Length: 80
Image (cartoon, rainbow, N blue to C red; front, side, top):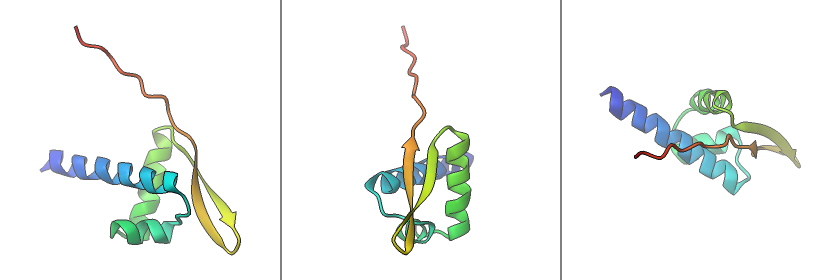
């Protein structure tokens, strides 16, 4: 069960990042796209920021959207 929950959270993080990269998404539209609550999106964004993703809200006209300003560098380790 713990593995399944961790996997689901990881998948949600990936989906949020994909949607933000695609552009024009606010907390409300992210929540609607993923069928979760707005507080869930806010918690996910906070967790992604703690992992090194620089996600900022930007105003566009009368609405807000999120922009991915910086992504952490992923380091891979080669196995022998």
